[in-house]
Length: 411
Image (cartoon, rainbow, N blue to C red; front, side, top):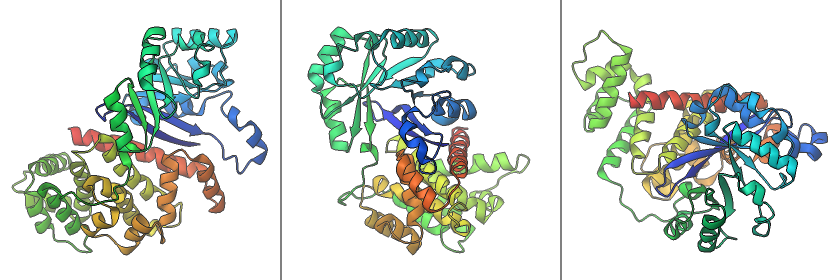
């Protein structure tokens, strides 16, 4: 099983929902299935299998989740697959293979009555009227912003299908997102705009972020001093509170007398792990929440993939590589300039800046995976003889780790 989540943002750059893309088999290992690959999940829908195993709260934090359904799987027993889930959070994502014939319309009415929401994608403007019976049941429609005049589309849908929310897809950069948002009309936005790499460095880094970077540099030295780390932590109230909460949970009956005492109780290894994740959180406070999530998930996923790529000895470095893979976005600087501010190994730098070196293959795999580029992911798994189930477990464990980490941060 392969699975990944693609965020959907609102006009405030807040994640409102996720699209869940899943594939149950590696078709490159089963060439005979390629011709029928579009029917993968005809009996059980892979995305719903994932939701039932992991849970909506773990995968999306309780937000709505869009799940792919095709013209065959729409007739599977979706209601039974989801009997233990909150159906109101599940949006069944249809495409133009689901035609406006009576059998499909009747089935979609059943699903709506059961509490599911519906979304439509890959529908040409010329077919809007033809699909009237389906669109009347639809909650969301995903539109190609390059082919749609949003001003006209807003008037059309508000008059003909007032209950449908419009979603703009494949937004490539922040400028396009800002332009679409200013025009108005869309409820959700999807694309790589929130993680577009910075290519020109003009912004000064805030003093607070410099303090965090100093702390990262300190603890990522081969043998850092606990007292120095504690003194840098003491400059930031948010970090002090977070540290004390963590230590108090670990040592309920111990009385913490100072920040240095708290740091000593954690020890060098645990303090380093906590600082890397806590500082990543603080560095992202002025960015979309998804940037922090992306940074931490990449870090943990890369770490979990270390043994799969026969790099178990480098797991901590791979964690840092994933963590810093959005450093250009966090600091608003090109990656090379951003990495000049932190102490990372040459191998991490080579992977992040030049996409080369011994860690580059792991980084590329992580990026291809999160974009649901299953063909390339499958190709790499075949070439490297990687077990798909191990990749799946590595990703799901990353999601669970992030969920637990985020819950700890809120306490």
